[in-house]
Length: 170
Image 1 (cartoon, helix red, strand yellow):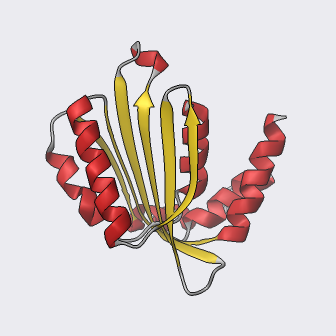
Image 2 (cartoon, rainbow, N blue to C red):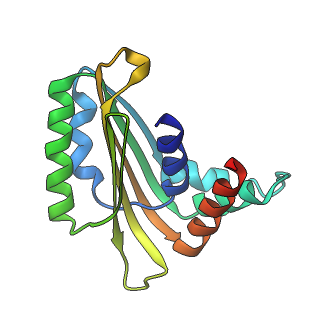
């Protein structure tokens, strides 16, 4: 499940917009781990034009991150906070008019991915991923994670990258 989550987060990372305001309150709660990557960081990364990229998948990821505005990841292993995260995600989905992209259920964990489609159906402006369930590495304790991405990403590039990763797993 962790591999699937990391894979999806890596691919989806270049995409989300305004859901972050719904989750900013989580930053101040004890028991919540937070990672925030700002537009400035993504712009700095995009300036590394002399970086030698050995494979096509890495190049596609590098191209995608250039359009990111922000990445926020909130995670907890506290059940009460996981429930609060679930409520916040439901509010964000409704208020932001997000569309469900996919659901994955495996080994007691659930991954839900939502997107905000732009007028140009080739791009997505927001991606919200919520992972909730049981972590085998923590002896069955509950865990939850919200991944919020804002920016613009070409869906075709994301699909190509997903295909490349899928072929690599075979």
